[in-house]
Image 1 (cartoon, one colour):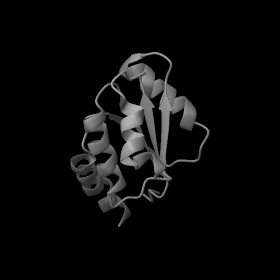
Image 2: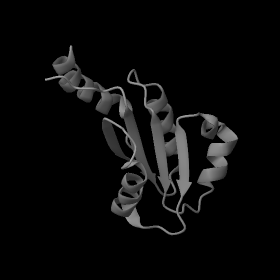
Image 3: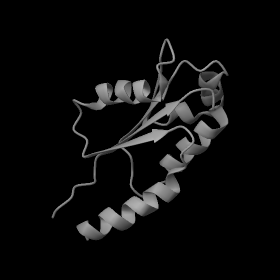
Length: 119
């Protein structure tokens, strides 16, 4: 089985967890598997998430695409919105992540399972 892992997007849904979101985004940026896009779906956070991300400078990362919704449509709604935005792009893999997931453990497990099939 030949698996292509070169085009990976992560969809991260968040609501009012700016500190955990920054931790999650930094972990995603540090992965050994480079992500083509990190799509952040903000469910209309009221804690200053967008300004916090701007002040940190993380939104200047070319792979991060930040979308703030006009209302909180919940986790499933956020993933639906994210999937609508990436469905026509030519990604090989889509990672769905809630804001507090730290990617290093998930990537390790994914790498152990998938990478061994490729190499």
